[in-house]
Image 1 (spheres, rainbow, N blue to C red):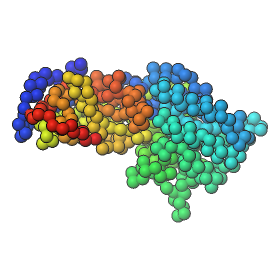
Image 2 (image 1 turned 135 degrees about the vertical axis):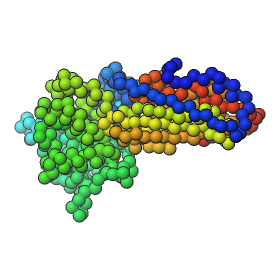
Image 3 (image 1 turned 90 degrees about the vertical axis):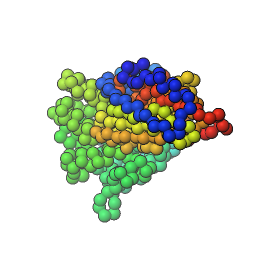
Image 4 (image 1 turned 90 degrees about the horizontal axis):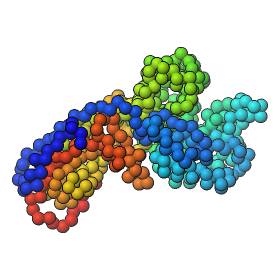
Length: 471
């Protein structure tokens, strides 16, 4: 048992009847941060793979603190085919099952290759648009059936590497809009789709008055198309304009990073470096990742940039801060509750997000009470969206739990649980979010310990008919 957490064996005497007007003591617990690198879902460095060839032991990446796999759906062999073969689709479906078994999630991107008739990317041509739509139609039910282990989508399908440049569709924003909307409408509605260039999104969501739609607090997480589109940069800090990422339509780097900074408060941002450059030293890298709310990055590329981050001493900080990193500071929990609903157990939790970004996918928030004598657990949903726990800010959550006869008398421990909302993953601790504190993580259940024991609930009258606990 963690020595910092109160152990109050004397509270067991509270099993005796308590007056309804009894004062309710408060257990205040302070927490110490954990500075180690550890795995958490949907954030961090990713490992590159061909999705249809996903290694059945991919879960080993968790040993490095990683949980993301960049899974490319390689469609080059089927570029001129109106349909995808069933055996290939079967391999894609099996890859998602492997991911589920191995405790990882996939960043999905489909592409038709990166070289054209002249052997270079400049001569690359897209697949026929109707073939692309047919292939998306075939993939859609597989993606919908495996949304639980999909972290996000990189838009893909268009341009060399699926990066939406060079080709006719990529350069014609009306065609780009039609294709991106088709992708959005055929991917799970609770998953984001990120695009390669800021100017691309601005043009796709252009308004009649000449401006463009954006994501802000009022429409974030609404499911609207614009709110589901985030950003990726596959030449992060690799030149003055990040190798054409910026200044594609007249906006300079400063203007477009300001646009990205506002959007990525509510949408994911990630990508990879593609070559060393003076901007990619540690001080500028950390500043840029914080400004753009970086959630994920390629662990394997560019190797020289990654090596420089290690040599300059910021690689570990990047490893810890990509995405959300939530740290408990204090909790306040009532020590006991009188029966009959007259009093409640009140749980208040203060935490900070010291990561670069917030969560970008839905996640449950639960206060779990554990009846120590029996080990029975009682989860209580907290009506809060943890995606609103923004980076660099402090947050407080509260849950009042009325005492009913469904809570047996005895001593209780308390936990904060942040599980995946999909029923297939909700009970899997590998998909629960771990808080960066010493001595709180329960790896067997995916709970974060708030109080080891000391919440005593008394029985003052004979048990009546069974009651249902409030959600």
